[in-house]
Amino acid sequence: MKVGVLALQGDVREHFSALIACGVYPTTIRRPTELDAVEALVIPGGESTTISQLAKSFDLFQPIRDRISNGMPVYGSCAGMILLADHILDAKADQESFGGLDITVRRNAFGRQVDSFESDIAFNDGTVTPLRAVFIRAPWVEKIGSGIEILAEVDAHPVAVRSKSVLATSFHPELTGDHRIHRYFIEEVARTALQHVQ
Image (tube, rainbow, N blue to C red; front, side, top):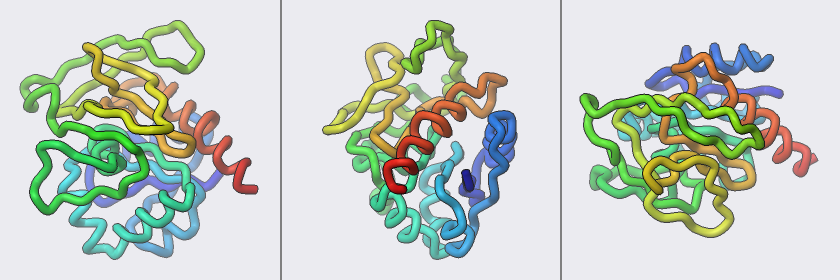
């Protein structure tokens, strides 16, 4: 499977390492031609407004939006979740998202940088082992639309959700040694979506 990591800003290297640990050798995505060459995409954590603006500067914003709407498998962590949400609360007036998930997210819902924390959470992937989650200025999901499956919650707020071909977490699994989220994206989300296309 050809997987790209959007490499405009954020923790790109950490996602690379997690994907490689899962047996996938990703490529960086900074140009539309590079996006054309991959079957799935990872949008890293970082600053959602900056990533959105840089995507427009690199002529990537609309191509990414189009590929997602056409069913390309995509996973976003933290800022990536914000960029995949159809609706954003507490966003800057001109902030746009790629869309793809019928959810409403609240930016910085858990607080500022000093409020960052780690927690063991239950992740609905069929296992009982808790998942270590790192929350850094993280969003949470305030409203769920149609076709959205909740995979994890903290204090009754969804922090991991998926649709058929889109996965998003408000936390940063790439910052831990646990690669279950990336493996879940590859095996359960991306491979399943791509098989239905073929």
